[in-house]
Image (cartoon, rainbow, N blue to C red; front, side):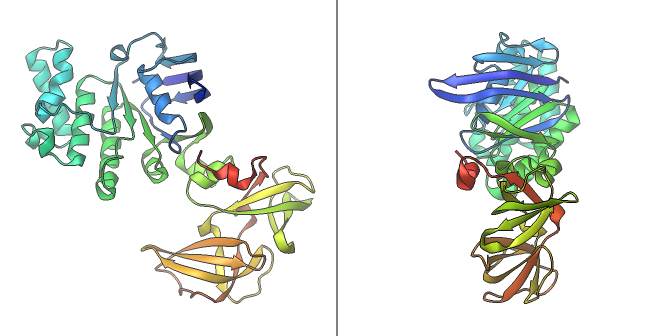
Length: 367
């Protein structure tokens, strides 16, 4: 199955820069996700790869072939839309076998393919059902089956789970990945849901304002975010502003608001540099009314929220900064609002970024 390369691709709609000089490589048989907030350019990039729109600049390769001038029907792709896009007057069987019939396959070959893909999506028993007789999850599986029946080597999915409820969405996303992997397809999945992308992707490209900010495995993006926006968009992060007051032995000492001092791994900053620390809520340890040592921050629990498998604490520090702490709900004793606590974290768990020109609020904004 093909590798896909996007080389310096740009696409404008009037004055709007939808895709801004993007270069990407999607590996053969990889399940790859384009992740970002609404309006970041991920769907436009998918449509460029599909050939539904043409780039203003740059090149797109499927396998070793430059496909800028190749029409969509000749790119060996299957496109799955958010809205299912099934023919309402056709049964599931007719929808699935439509592609082979249009391509001129023999009746027997079309029937063989139809049975195979309906078995693959586990809906063979509903082949006589019309779309309005199927659930949302079933319709989306039929849409995937139709794309596969047409002989797709690459599966492009544009927010394919957006119209499904949460429980069905969680089930179907694993089904789609399973089908792509079973068939050895190269798949590109567009979503704004970071939990969805993290759970099914081999690698993810995080996009913002038409650009790709970082590409990596889910683990790489979570454990080593390359920017404040990625740390904010992938999972959750607490952000603390400060400036470097000491650099020694691969560590930086950072003074926060109110004179609080913490240590972090040195990232090449200089004394006096203004920085932002990003700390995951689950990376913070919390003890009741204990005086800590290095990297200890005292505060007061303002709010406690039970979230099933975890408990979320909102803690107001002595300098009035607010931090979120998330701990498993089944381990340890819960703390209550108004209790005095000490938070601490390992220097390795804090990600240090240069303070952005747009300010912290501007850097974390979705648009």
